[in-house]
Image (cartoon, rainbow, N blue to C red; front, side):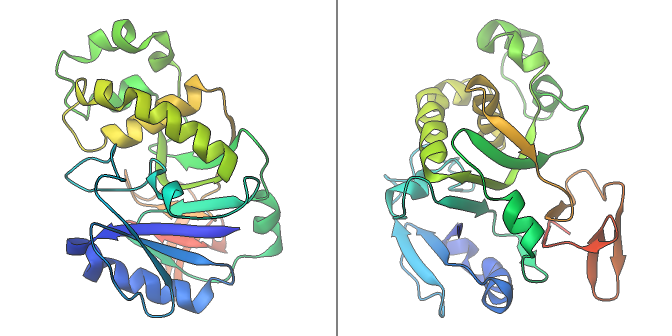
Length: 241
C-alpha cells in the first residue's frame, strides 16, 4: 500500500500541514507529486510530473486525481494506491481493520459519498454549469447519469491495475466532458461516471476513514477536543473540515 497526493507550485504552502501529519502517522510509503515544478518535501518522496504528463487535469486546479501520477509512481500492478487531495489531515495511524478494508483486488475501488447516497450524477450536474443544460445529459452521456452515484474523489483507493483502467477510460472522455461542463469539478464528475461505466465494484468508504465537509458535517460526525470523529471513532483522515 502506498499513498499519493499532489500539488502545483502555488498550492505547495497549503499542502505542507497535511504532509506534516503524514510524516507523523503514515507507516506506509507516501509520494508527493509536484506538478510543473520540483520541491524538497522534507522526508516525503517528491516525484515531479510535467504539465504535459498531467493532461486531463482542470487547469484551474491541476489536480492529479484522475490517475496521471501513474506515469511517475512505480509499483506492482496488484499494489494498492491510495490517492488523496491536499486539503487533508491525517489524525492517527491506520488500524488493522482499515488495512483489511483497503486490501482490494482487481476492479474494486474504495470511495465515499459526496453529498450522500441519494445524490446521482444528474443531481451533481446542477452545480457544474452544464453548457446545454442538465436535460441534455442523458442524450450526451446515456441514462446512466440518472442512476450512477456521484462520489467524492478526494479519497480513492484501487490497485494499480484498476487505476490504469480508470485512467485510460477517463482520458478518452476528457475532451467531451470539457465540452459539457465549465466547472473544475468536471474532473470528479467524470471519475464518478467512469466508475459506473466500467462497472467497478465499489466498496463505500466509511466516514471513519475519510470524513469530509463537502455539503457540511455528515450524520455521525462531531468535533471533539482531540479531532474530528465519525461514528464514535477518531477519523483517519479529515478533509475540508
